[in-house]
Image (cartoon, rainbow, N blue to C red):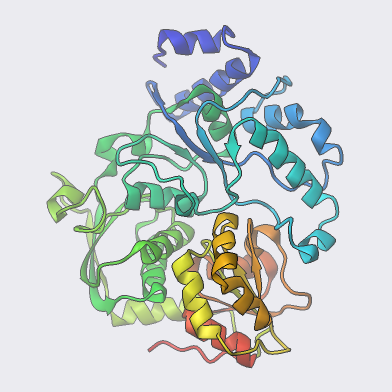
Length: 424
């Protein structure tokens, strides 16, 4: 690998033991990928402080945690301050929730100790899977080092910044060296579309964009779809759900919607000089098959639990939930949990959204989701969600039956205790 003089100095320990271990990791990682060099980055989204009840003395062993989990180092080195804009992603639990604290023992304390430790070293404790909703919005063409599949596909496809799906180790190393291997989606030629997708049915709602993404993930796997046809211009929320679903059923990290996404003002820009390797058609049959697949593991219509907020809800989505719920009451036989970034919960509190949801019998949580925390109301067997991503993961993780539908169908289900969703 070709290194600059400064990178060689970091590798050789001239700038401290932590950077030397970080460079060792990045060089090994880059060489395994076939990268010829590193690229500078000033935008990292990863995980530092996480809930871990096994680490009883977490607050006393931060350097060991950082060395092993963020630098892949057997040698314990002192944790330096980060040198990039670094954002903590989604965490294990909502530490402000008495219910979650009661079920996780020392996990809340370890998570909060980690936040304090790494926060003092410059990591912004946003604690969300949607860092772009709370201030981390890289500019077009900016090289980033991000974890979290739904965040990565949004970063590449919607913002036009450049990142691969990184891990805790590479993001940790990037945060103190300002370097990441130059490969994959950092290279312009790797960002062109591969598959043309002709949408033959009109899609507009969040649910429909989620279904389209879920179908596409299976079809293109890790390639780059270019969306054309009868869709209305999507907003941030619809693209968020579309990308999250495509990254769940497949490995999509990049997409183009000509006329909407930044690297595809036209179809010609999306595809470049290449012809698509295939043209896929999404029509009535594909839409119905996808809906049935997402609902295939559910049969009981009595709902125990409704979960909204995967990826974490925006303020606009919080408003939609409140409007569907206002002056109604959650069934005594069901529960409604709503998830949003902690920064946006402050606004929800100020706007009265949280009060409306809680007055109806629901709960608003931050920092996590049921798929990450492995927590649901006690005795939950049947769940409803508005997220194709959560419908994909939650049954496998928890064993619960899971229904998928619109926000309004989910809220109605929480109020009545019965699932009545259907494909219109």
